[in-house]
Length: 407
Ligand code: NIG
Ligand code: FE
Image 1 (cartoon, protein in one colour):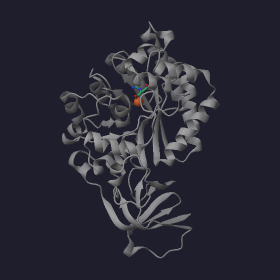
Image 2 (cartoon, protein in one colour; image 1 turned 90 degrees about the horizontal axis):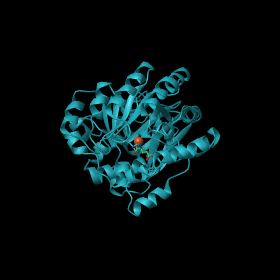
Image 3 (cartoon, helix red, strand yellow; image 1 turned 45 degrees about the vertical axis):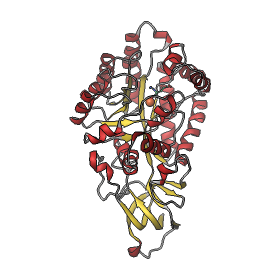
Image 4 (cartoon, protein in one colour; image 1 turned 135 degrees about the vertical axis):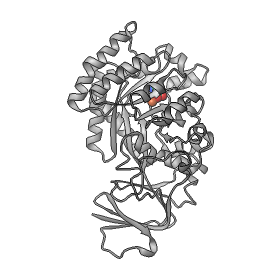
């Protein structure tokens, strides 16, 4: 099957080599070809160039792209899209004055989502989750990391991971699974956090390894959830089972989570709404990707991750949605790019690099997606007629996407 995209106004994020990630000043460069063509064969990008050199070949489909941009699909490296029900009531409670932390202290929050998830069948959970996966695909996401963490018992955590496995089997999107049993301490272990962690390590992790249910391990390293010692214990155990760390750190407090992540060679450290200078120094000596989740800051009205400090220090940065029922009920990566430009002072080039190639690195798929590179998967966004890629941020909230091709 051959598909030729013709008369592309601008082919965005063209990288001849399969770059791992871009960092610091490099993030201001977004390589493009104006007036371009691109050839896809059996779901793989095989060639592209300027229209003047467009080959006259027989193809199965031609996609006319006059006035339109073609870009790699978004790589959303941090989501929790497998969940049950919603938390609209807590949303209204927050409007009326309660904080996210206060709601959690009253038994709402993650524990509320866990209660709902435990009550429904695997089938029903799959149904609710695949709707969200299809929703984000239509919004241009072609690679997504999905976490467990709303089960908080052996059975329910495994139920979530089986659902993720089924999504992997049934959809063409690149999906990576993360075990986030350490998302909160469930009521049964209220006074025995150590017992809960032991259960995750001794009961759940061996099953995950045996059934190959996850690539990554995550911990909510935060005051009132899991401290640095807990985090290190879980990451060390995860390593024994082949799980690479990708962790929640510094959402509300700087407690040493960045150092714990880097110590265990985390692929990414995510949130970073709070960030010390020491954290920046630690990240500089690592291959760990900092990940910002601006839709979460927007929804909870908490500080934005200091992107300028991170990038200006020469570090890379990735952007992801954090799509989940409590802190970010949105999986819209175009909106994430817009908020990053508007609120975090990222240039459109930096934001698009962060949402494509750097996001791909943060979920371990940079060799397959995240740029227009020969040999990579043909996961592509064709925009509506657009002035330039800056329009994605400038006319924020609008739908700029006309078609999405996933492999
Ligand atoms: O990344 N902070 C921890 N976990 C999620 C939110 C969980 C929830 O509120 O359900 C996050 O924001
Ligand atoms: Fe999260």
